Length: 131
Image (tube, rainbow, N blue to C red; front, side, top):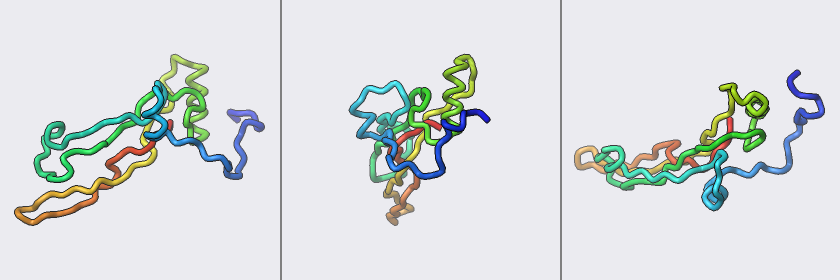
């Protein structure tokens, strides 16, 4: 057993919801730890994509930062990895800052002269977590 039994989480759901590392939190606080970071992508300038007519670009955002012990860890595995890395700083195993919630982006493009509207899934990062 890796953790003492009194440290294990109960099977009952926690009534308090963990604060999401979203734009409202991350953009107003200077954070070195895992947080949502702003990133605007212009389709034509940044990617060379001329086929998307609208929008011209969008706020894609991304996740970055350190994952110290118990920082936004959503699984027992990521908590154990983080604690392991705290005790063994030379070890390579540690949680990573990854996207948690993503939203779609609606685009307008043309096939010939026919306009097409399509929703691209998982294009906008809304919150992050350590995993």
